[in-house]
Image 1 (cartoon, rainbow, N blue to C red):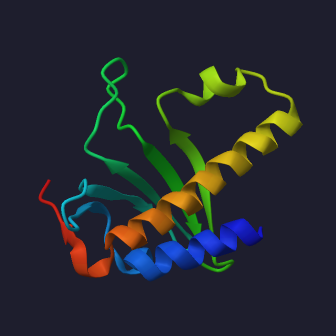
Image 2 (image 1 turned 180 degrees about the vertical axis):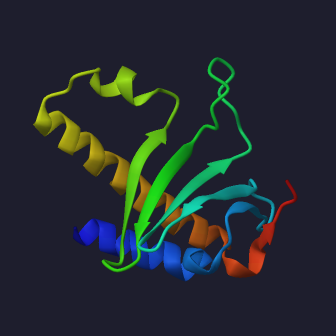
Length: 135
């Protein structure tokens, strides 16, 4: 849970996602890749997001890398519910993984999210570089 809380603090400091309306946003910082942030859904206690670059896997067409996130407003936690890092989760852990393997995979995804958020902060991404894109 400490990892989820740390990631919540990082993403809140970077993008203030609770204040964003549903839709698509892009963050352009320096000479790096543009970061795409999609606010998929907002609910009373949660917000669903996707972080990605404009790079697509040539085989699946999925944004690569990408992370789907669920922010828990009241608990101040963020969870990476699934990530695409060149392979689908089914290809990584199988269709019916053992509970320990599933927990390990979730820990891996949320550790990746923390590292990615730190990297984005170092590259200069944040509220000041975030622009809403037209549908």
